[in-house]
Image (tube, rainbow, N blue to C red):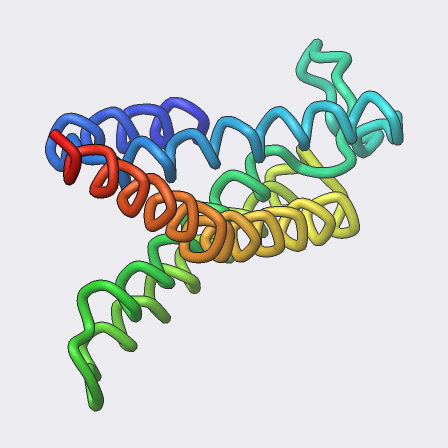
Length: 160
């Protein structure tokens, strides 16, 4: 899963090559770092049936948080940047499909025995909350800073 996420992120960055994709990729990296830090703090072992020679902790599931982060921001992007007013049925359906696929990918971590349901649920919650917060941050703080910088630069250039 990690390789697929990295490859799709790289393809999106190359294809779109804009500030939005850089911002969303930075959010994914920060979400992953937060997940790893939480693993080191919580130190909950993986399920006992997990025996793949790996000794990392399982709470929260990093894969679940990453896939749900991307699902959240992509769904928000579809519904806010591509939809130009109701009904936007195709974007709603696509956002729901993305969310269901992400949820399936997250829950597969339980099925294959890499995580417990609670570890995956924590990863899902982390990804959705971080994705929502990062998207909100993009449209509040960054937009405000852009407006302030724009006004300041306009005033500077007005005197030139």
